[in-house]
Structure formats: C-alpha cells, structure tokens
Length: 382
Ligand SMILES: *Cc1c(COP(=O)(O)O)cnc(C)c1O
Image 1 (cartoon, rainbow, N blue to C red):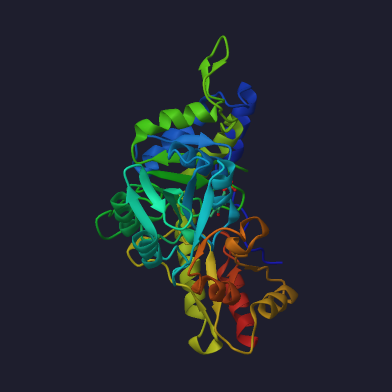
Image 2: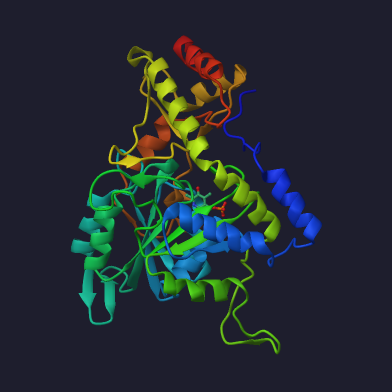
C-alpha cells in the first residue's frame, strides 16, 4: 500500500530523544522545550513562541487570549478540520460558518460582505445583527499549507476591531514571496498563530503544537495559562482557570530534530507536487489544485480535483484502494456536523462542490517518483 502520509524520522530524532531520556528530563521541564521554542522563533523570524501539547491547545489559547467568552461569536471556515472550530465551543462561544473559495481557504469576499452587511460596529464591539452577540475574531486556516489571503483578512479584522487567528497547523514553512508581507510566514501575520506537530503534519513531535503572536508580550499569559495558571510556585496559588497544555521535553526533542530537516521536507513536497502535475494529463479528467502564487507554500497535502463526469470521488477512492493507493476525501463540512447544524452559516455554496470532487493523494516526504508515476498511471486507466 502507498500510504497517504507518513512521518519521516531519519535525522537526529533518536539521538535527541535518547539524550533527554538519559538525562531524566522527560516531562515539561528540560532544555529541549526552550530550545524548540527558540528554534521555531529563529525559523519564523519572530520574538516569541509557546510550545503546547497540540495544535488544538494552541488554538484554544489563542481564542482565550483574544478574550472570546460565552457571549461571543467567532467567524470560522466550514471546510476544515474540526479542531479549528471546537475550541470556540470550549470557551462557550459560538462559531459562524463561512464558505471557501477556489483555493479552499475561507472566502474573503464573503467574510467582507458579512462584516459589512450583517454586523454593526458599536461602542462595545462588533455586533452580529441577527444574534445580537459580539463577534470577537476570525479564524483563518491555511488549508493544506496553501497561504490564505491574510494580507486582506488582517486589514479587514483591524477595520472591524476584531482579532485574526491564523490556524497554520498545516502550513509551517509557508511564507509570502510577494506583497506587503514578503518573507513573513503563515501564522505570524495575524494577532495569533497556531502550529501543529501531530503525526500527520509536515513535521511531528508525535503530538504537539506551538502558539505565536503578532505582539509577543501577549504570549506570557499564554504560557501561564498553559501551565495551570500558577501564580505562586511554592504555595500553589492560582488566580485563573489554566490548562495542562505544556509540551514535554521528549516531544520537544523530536521537534528540534524535525525542524532541522523541515526545509528538506518542503523541497521534497514541492518536487513531488510538480512531478504529479506533469504526469496528470489534462485529458485525464483530473487536475491538482493550485497553491497561492504569491507564496512559497509548504505543499503539505495535495488535492486531486476530479473533473470527469463519469467518476465520483468515492469510486476513484475505491479503485485506487484496489490498486494499493491510499487516498482520503476532504473533511465533512463542519456546519453540517451534528453539534453545529443550528449555528449560523453564511452563503455556503462552493464548499459542498469542492468536497464532492476532491481526494487527497499520497504526499509523504519519502514518496518516490516511481510511486507517483504508478499512481498517475492508475488514474489514467479510470
Ligand atoms: C491538525 C489540525 C489541527 C489540530 O492540530 P492537533 O495538533 O492535531 O491538535 C487544527 N486545525 C487544522 C486545520 C488541522 O489540520
């Protein structure tokens, strides 16, 4: 079987994890956690980062630091992994669902129209005219590592006095190559950014995440909340409800080793993407979705768009499975999931079409040219 995506652990992972074990620093204290945070800051060219247990935890902290409460609402995409949305509910707030555009990222035109036509700026904040609740933030996901239009979204959120949270869990390494934010990385432009090091992400710590912020001083509180909000280390005095969200030294040891080779991974992902693209003939009824041309994208996951009318997504999935190729449909839209059907969903038209026509195809770093040729050969036969 050619797997969809497997981690690549051929660098210093064993060496660093062994060292952490031998030193006895296996939990949340120990040098690798701070080293991993520092290495991430150096890579992203930013001033602060808080290592967490998961990307979901980082997103939860970002929303909490954006002062999202049970009176509030948060604008989110419907086409994404559910972990981008659930933390809104952890805080008792409600999501408002947005459509995607042809890049699969949140539709900025619709976000703008919604803010303009359906919300009111008041002394106390931005109010949703329908629900009368405050809107505190927009969560933008860089889907499959493809840079979303954060240039535009940041201006919009600033204009309406709300926060922009970048879910960059799939987009570590993606950065602008043009425009106002040239050189800036996905996750570092909005008010807060979250990364993930889950097993399927571009680099992994087994499980883990990282929180970053446009204003790094805001991260002190994030770090404090992630470590049970302890105000006195000796007498255990707590003045807020905190979380047990700190990354462990063992996870961070893996992270340090993985980050050393991230750029090699991206080179391999880009090369494989272009090889796929060259192999998939226009006449075959398939195409690969494009990435944002204004960015060096990390090409984490590849989206195969099925144009052939005689083929459904699930038939293609089954046929590829018979030929030992693992693929996966994109996520069930979140506004249609049981917990969210009663939430406001604004003009969702494109997302259902994309879900119907897209499969993710194998994209591991160690995927070979021969395997890609085999996969595209199978597609040609369908
Ligand atoms: C992976 C992912 C997350 C969550 O990250 P974890 O580290 O698995 O908690 C959140 N949002 C999106 C879009 C993701 O792909």
